[in-house]
Image (cartoon, rainbow, N blue to C red; front, top):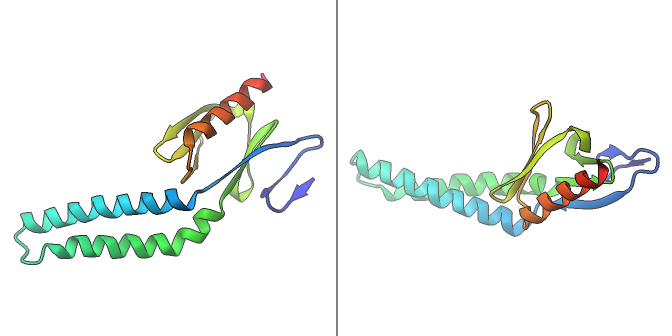
Length: 144
């Protein structure tokens, strides 16, 4: 059965267990943190090289990361991962069968799924990545 919202086809009898979407608040917090760290680093470098206007570092970082974040926000927030009773399906038609999942682990506000062949997939900007890891591991465990 084809469902355009899933980005992949469900097999006969396959059922959706959960969907994971990027969280807007988490996305914004991640970009603010990145801008603060990059701004502090840029300002420190400008101070170290003797630039008379070190404040430009923080301004440039805020503007650069802010513009990039705003530009990519709709694309990142549209990404949806679907957990079925057989697989994890992601954007672009990705489909990872449970028997192919080696690890699911939290990386900050994301979940990294590693396959047995070494492919890595990132479910980004999650409000509760620990819960997503638990859901994936529980679903995988039921399938054994």
